[in-house]
Amino acid sequence: MEAHLRALFGPVVARIAPPEAIEDEILTMRSATLACRAEARAPARESCRTWSGKRFAVGIALFVGLALFAAIAAPHLVTWAVTIWAVTTLLAVTGLRTMAAIVQFRHARCLAKTHQRGSPNLRAANQLPRISLLVPLFKERDIAQRLINRLSRLDYPRERLEICLILEWSDTDTERALSTARLPNWFRVIRVPDGHLRTKPRAMNYALDFLQGDIVGIYDAEDAPAPDQLNDVVRAFEGLPENVACVQGILDFYNASRNWITRCFTIDYAIWFRVILPGLEKMGAVVPLGGTTVFFRRNALESLGRWDAHNVTEDAELGLRLYRRGYRCAFLPTVTQEEATATIPTWVRQRSRWIKGYAMTWAVHMRDPLGLMGDLGLARFLGVQILFLGTLSQFLLAPFLWSFWLVLFGYTHPFVTHAPWSVVIVISSLFLLSGLATMVLAATAVARPGHRWLIKWVPLLNLYFPLAAIASWKGAIELVVKPFYWDKTSHGKTEGAKPGAPRISAKPV
Image 1 (cartoon, rainbow, N blue to C red):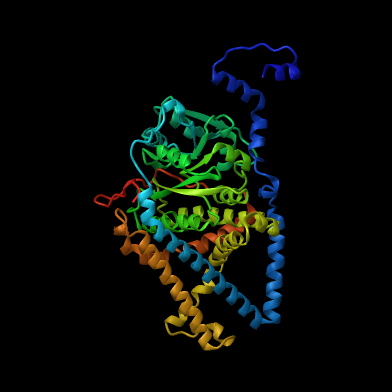
Image 2: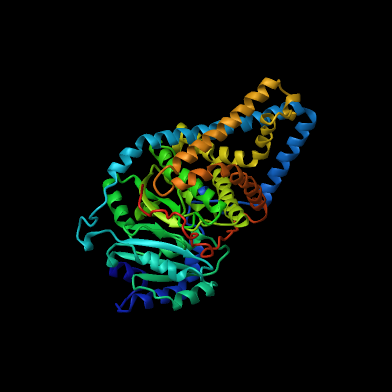
């Protein structure tokens, strides 16, 4: 660098200093610049940072106004249009999930055979890739020491591993908790300066500038990964083509038996991470990534522009952007256990954030539909419409679809004034079959060692899934009033399982 530095500054002199002192000096001079850059890493055309709640509100108001006018002028046509859309999206979402499940179940035996466990260090420790683990924390004083203990169990050469605990500058509670914890020397703490927003992707964008890893992984504050997980990740990357930019692990819960919410949450995650997402990956469809236990090749992540700091579901958005650039994701049958939210208000807040992020992701990438189709191809483009728009439509129109349950209980449906009774029966039957398909999928997803005890709780999903409708309307309101607000989920409150409850193995099954 000497010739380059002399061209910029004139005479230069080398000076030796500890890395910490150099970083402190950089932060003294440039922390504001680095924080600002962390908010605008993702390409502007694929970022939601230009999202305007007021503009969105105007658009929604115009749409609602036109819909009301149409409903008054032609109620028959509007009723049919809403019904056709609701039924079409129901069939599309159910069909895609079912296809993914069939593909995954066909490959399940092969998946078990190809995941070899054993001595992972095929090379000398100093030849293994460096791994940087990002662990964003905010108001996590109750879980700091437990987190350190869990991540300390990771079996990977310490000289090739750096675990970065990322704190917000104003989060003095977590900072105090970490100061009293026993922090191993392969851990480090990075504090993110205050800025215009406070989100997990912004914090990760900022911290990554200070890390050296060839592989970048993400864990949440409450995570308990399998000890050999990092070795499995390295082995997976070594055996995968270069266009596989990331590997995603399986998420599970260590407090599944806490109450009916945590049981249903565990079933929900079993469907999503053990069946649907791996099936989509094998189909070649776009995979919305999870927010934890996901590992990236550093060079691919940098070429994507890292995370969109303004998107509150940055994981799913990055998954879509990854496929637009010609990269792919692979699934790794290694398990990280988390803490499931155990109360309805907390669950609704968390799910509303995810739904809000899905809506933003779809809207941003559909600014140029032809460009999106050109990047993905027709099949993947249609899959994105089903995954994002179809799922959002199902959440928002759920009360309308539920009304068809009236027919199954012998009541007359209001739609009968606009359509023959036979059509109402057909729609109600489709709704029933979709519900049954979901129940069968759920039961199959947990029909495995460590999860079979959850099968008897599958019917409770009929009470669990309607909560997503509430969350979707909360998310829709926030798209107007506070689109970038990160509704924080508290951890460390309900970790323990009830005495005598089944324990879920951390090993893949």
